[in-house]
Amino acid sequence: MMKRLVLSGLCMLFASGIFTTVVAQDMTPRLHTEILGIGSVLGGDDFNNVDLGFGGLLLAGPKIGNFSLLGSGSYRRYELSDSDNHLDVWGVGVAPRYTIPIENEIVKPWIGASGTVLFQSTPIDNADDPSSTGFEVGGAAGVGFQLSEQVVLNTCANLGYMRFGDLEVGNETQPNTDTNGVGFMFGLGLTIIP
Image (tube, rainbow, N blue to C red):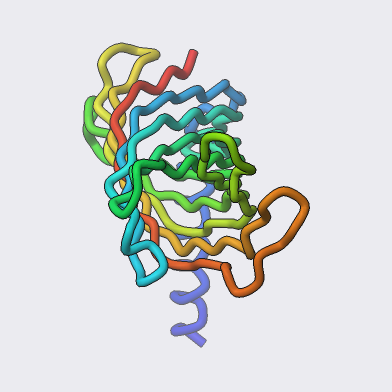
């Protein structure tokens, strides 16, 4: 009986501590806006001819307490090692994020996930551009450095699995041209939270 009372008391104490921590946070929704310059590497046999890519990433959405639910838009350009052409990859997705609370007013570590719908194309002069749609899912982590009350210098790294369907050239689908592999992305930019 005594063990049950002690266990119940400890559970209540733990629950009240969590509740106090959550209530102590500022739960007022704030706009989280972030823009980053990114570098990206594609891995896997299907991407052997794809070199290091560069581009930009824009994220925006509500931040409540330590949680952010962000919509994302991205562009990446990769040079192709076996031709003079390049590969354009556009993406639109969602990126939930959690900022890990630590006792430091400057360093802001975070973890997150991402799900993105992708569109790729290879521009070719005087011909129809081969293109396809796909997706990417993965995890992300980073560290922010508080520059002022509303501005954070942010670093990030994202590792994910990506897959594209068969290429379309003009109105024709090219069979057995689907691709898949691993995408690694790293970035540096600014986060603004008014």
